[in-house]
Length: 576
Image (cartoon, rainbow, N blue to C red; front, side, top):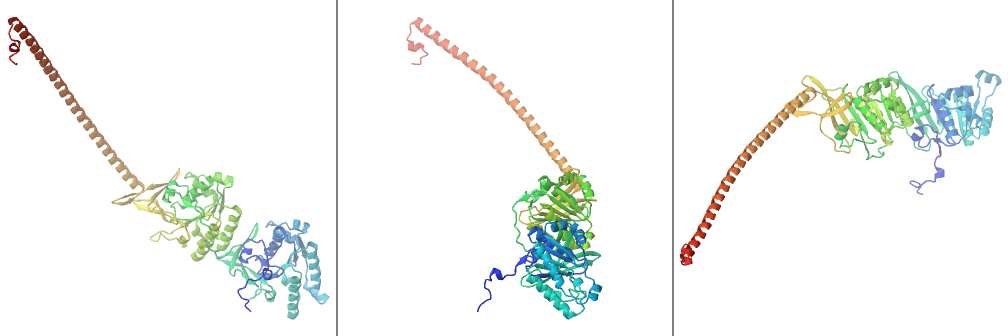
């Protein structure tokens, strides 16, 4: 019978219960196994109790599943105080019949005095607590305290199995916490074998920086993430950060947005950068990376977009003051809540904790633009390879949410300036390089667009000038002597202006000479015309006079002919 590759009924698939813990349900593809027992183990201070309590609180509040917390180490009041900093109000949940907390005091000396010990009494108390609130979720914290009085390994194994079977028979989704043993996941080395799911919490110190990690060691009947995942305990609970990127399925926006520097927008196909893309601004110290980032933030806030700035070199006050000196006042945006600033030294957290912290801040603030300034400082707490892996996850996380991100990167200079110290340029959609151009005894800033995916960008170098009115990008002078910037460019431009003025003056002089000659010629023409007209009038007058004399002579001849009675034709001049 062919049973492989067939569609399995959904009722036969393992059902899962969402924990509501950010990131955890993603890596377990749905949460914890429903109606089964999960072991959460780890060393002291790794976050086991907080993980278990958040599972109950979010189950009650977000999924309508009441829970029972059976404690062996902390009383109800102590637990309420311990989780109050996470924003969990246990008293309100208890009063609302969404949570029951039962503290059981177990003292080895008392057990030894009274004789046999088994879990029957515990089952009675637990059953009562479950029924009192209609619990769907149960937490037992911590298991080794409960079994610390049992020295017989055979009885221990038997009671372990009985407890796990009892919980499964009640149909509750349970978490049991346990201390990590020496060379094993738990002290007794048994719990992990009878649990359907095993989660290991760990806290390690690297370069004197502590980071918490979570790993799903075992999960029967389902796929799950197998890597170590850093997690953060903060004011809103626990956030687990996926270690690997989730793929390249994020959408690509066609919308463009201004960088706040018009001539830079012109270099980027005249429209600026793509929204939701990643931009790298690299350069040596003092080239203006943070100033360019301030223009991007300023322009975004003017459009009403929220911006989140992670700074690893300057405090908020220092940065705002410095940017004000170049005409970029960020104070109004901070006051309006459009801009949030998180400044800290990279050594505050481990690398993964930085990533978890950024995730938490981004999820909370919901920005449209994020700035990380500079990413290279993260290399203080990890290797360049680890920084690159972390930034890859951060880039994918931000792209998945359509957030435009600007990273600044400090480069060491030298011949390999078109490289970043942490090798992240290939992750970026747009790469702007700021560089000092040396010449004529001075240093000036230059800006290049090394790459910008999806657009036809400029290949020209622009001189990068900062003044009290902000950033200007100027054309550099390229001549026989090479590229000129700064005062050399200004001198060359002044020389060109002088030459242009001289050419203009020469043209005007020639035009005036031509006009003068034209006037002389026209005057000569007018004089000749006048002389001609005078001669013409004189000739015409002579001709008119001769015509009149001829006419008079003719009349005299006719009169003479009539007086002589001569032949008329003969006296008409003999013309007949």
